[in-house]
Image 1 (cartoon, rainbow, N blue to C red):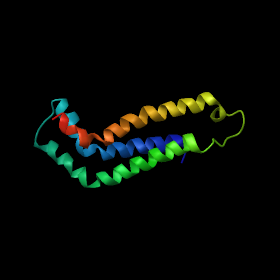
Image 2: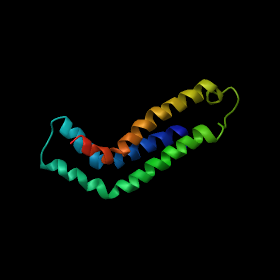
Image 3: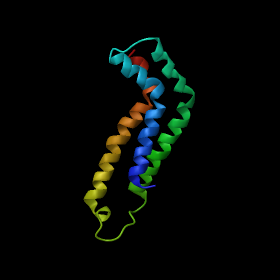
Image 4: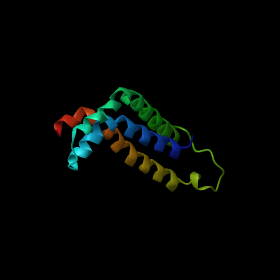
Length: 112
C-alpha cells in the first residue's frame, strides 16, 4: 500500500468513525431535521472499528512519510525533496481535520 492509498483509507475510515455523530450535527446545521435523523445513531456500535482503522491507516501513512526512506530509482519525482515536502504537508492538512472529526463525539455536546 503506498502513501496515497494509506491516506485515503484513513480519511474514509475517519468519516465512517464519525458518521454517527457528525452527520446529525451537519444535517441539523443545514436545517434538515426529523425523527429519521436519530436513525443515524445506528452506526455507533461500529464506531470503535472505524476509529481503529483510522488510526492504523494514519499511522501507516506517517510511517511511510517519516520513518521509511522512499525506495525509488534516482531521477524519479519521489526522490526529490520538494515532492516529499508536499506529501508531508498534504498528510498534515488531512490528518488534523480528520482527527478533529474523529474526536467530534467528545466535543459535539458543546454545539447542541
